[in-house]
Image (cartoon, rainbow, N blue to C red; front, top):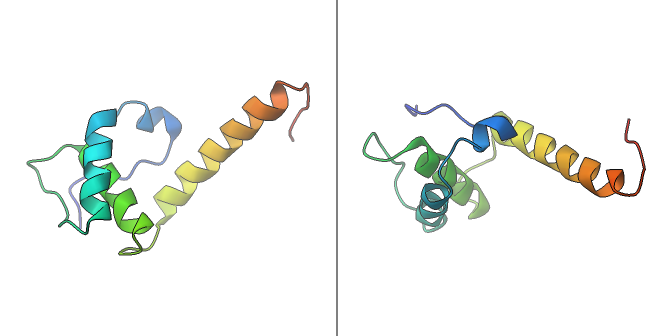
Length: 87
């Protein structure tokens, strides 16, 4: 089990370092080992997503929660600009 807590919300995601996320994503995409305490939570978050996108790991509930929130925010932005209310 990892020492890092999964990212479940956009607010939490916004606290992470984008460059570390990308570096971790590339590490996971290429099948790299799970990062330890020498890496940041941002790197670990990217690694998890790279592992899932490369089909080396299954998505988990935290990734699903974050994706649903981000998709909902995206829909609100798109439809809200046209004056459409989503319920």
